[in-house]
Length: 344
Image 1 (cartoon, one colour):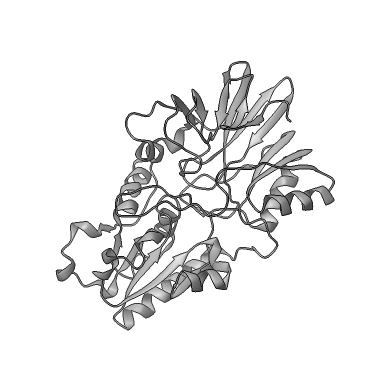
Image 2 (cartoon, one colour):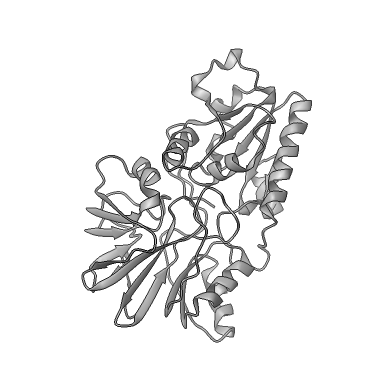
């Protein structure tokens, strides 16, 4: 199907280099685009990822995983192919992986975004012959607002809740989105508390040199002696409606996600407020990125892949759908234990 990659039951495979990219099953050698659960799977013998993902990936994969890391922009040769990691702008350490041999190149983007995020390196367009793109929000209805406007809305919601004596619980995926929110909110408004899953990954970000405001792990305070009415509590989506959340008393619940652009999603999740903030490209940025790669072949996966592929064909590109075992919103995060999520 491609000069360098084929689709196998275990995922994308480079036969010449004898490695997989974000494999779905355990393999001998896995190249990982980023640390979210649908891309970094346990059980492989060896992993290679971008150097800036070191701390977050170690937290997610555990001490026993055989992890190696490569700086952005520094190529390495694996089995006769040249491999280079480039920033994807999705979360800290997220990477596009460029694979080259004999003048032909394929880039696997993983997940990526083009909007500003101080907690990770910005996306770099990479020229290639074949581009493997996600399409999580690959519909024209998805167009992201200015992130600063979204943070202004969050700050206003937090202040209004304070004035009515109501705690504010902001739901976001614990790896990436939570840290982006913490870096963007006005920490002078009041105290910030974190769920255990967020607290654990904050440590990985801070170890990587990412500045975050002071926060307190909810488990470190006596809930009966804590005034939650001025607080912002950052927690994963699975915390909503749980006994864990009952400790905060009078509570307003908001969620930050690209899915919040759809009113029905907000209703189904029973949120008081939805804030449109995504770590994926929207429709216009998706098309912009594909143009900038100058790729003549585009493989589309994760999301609205068939719709995006048909649209790309009208643009004169050779587009194909790559089926994945992780379609739609993947959410496994269930408790205070820091288990996995897939980001949005």
